[in-house]
Length: 444
Ligand code: G6P
Ligand code: MN
Image 1 (cartoon, rainbow, N blue to C red):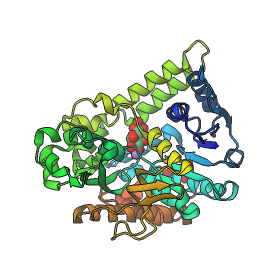
Image 2: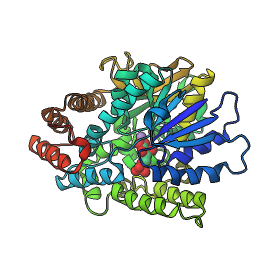
Image 3: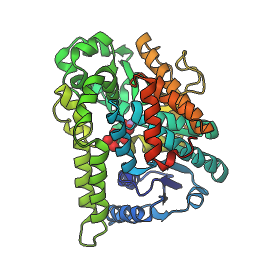
Image 4: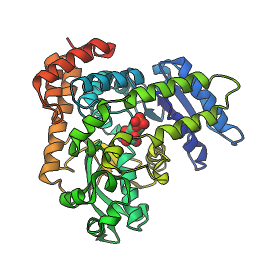
């Protein structure tokens, strides 16, 4: 089986390869093709992968290419994990947003819109080529903003593109853990958009255990989201939000905390620049360096949000990532027709009654050889449905701008976002982003 990884020189690729190495099952991936626009990054990550494979019998063969069509041709699965504009672009997104007093996070608010505007045209091109060169392939989209990018690709690939994120999976696992339930046996009643969802129930043996959690402040504050939002607010909501809702519910604090020092993007940019330079030195143990760099990245994830909330350090068990586990579980369920239940980004098809059928939503799905089938979920309460609708309207304006090159649609995308508070700010953001991002030259 051939797996193609787009963004194959990306820092998290060894996570995926590690999971492939651990998979000894029937019909596993035997060939991995890494595609990247940057040959140097491919070679750097190639060094880490060969260190991982050393001594492992039947390790999947790895090749790299900068030719996209060649990479896609004949693929059974495509993992799309690209970063248009690189981490430098991410740092620009943040800096320009903060200069206007709004959020620059790569998926939330102004930063997410800027990132979406330059990523959607590239993702659409990938989707079109995949439909032509590998029409039977399943595409698993890792690229942020994941919901928006998956929806853009679904217009060309239908239900053959599925978006993934590890945040809801991690949230479900944490809630199950504090309730003493096995995560595999719990059914999580979770719904929303990517980085904008809520857990409204956790069912084990036909009983919803969430009320017990909400009634117990000590239990609530014993895990990441409980500490971020505080027991009192979670009890008021009657639900546990995805960690990214922190940017909405504590918007003012988030702007203040993120606006000062180096941004996440610039921190990662410097960290990764060091990694990619040093890893090519033949005297550097590539896998050790990668592991240390990754540990630092994980430990500092959402540090500013945790600091404003007084949430402390991340729990050790939350530091192990999870993307690769979701992706592998999804790929395995499809390839081997092994039914699995996973929270995924798929077309709505009536799951959330207030959204149209084509809207990509993040909900629990049953997966088998025919793909991911959304399960029924509780309807969202009004305030959550309102946010979901507002953000979906923003996504649609981004898609319209990317499809037409219309500057007015791009301004509309920024101006409609609940965390951007002025049409004038939106206009200035479009100008400022247009000035630094070559990927936005299409906006006339
Ligand atoms: C979480 C989010 C992802 C994000 C990742 C890394 O897993 O769900 O969407 O890509 O964290 O974030 P970082 O700030 O380290 O790039
Ligand atoms: Mn995510």
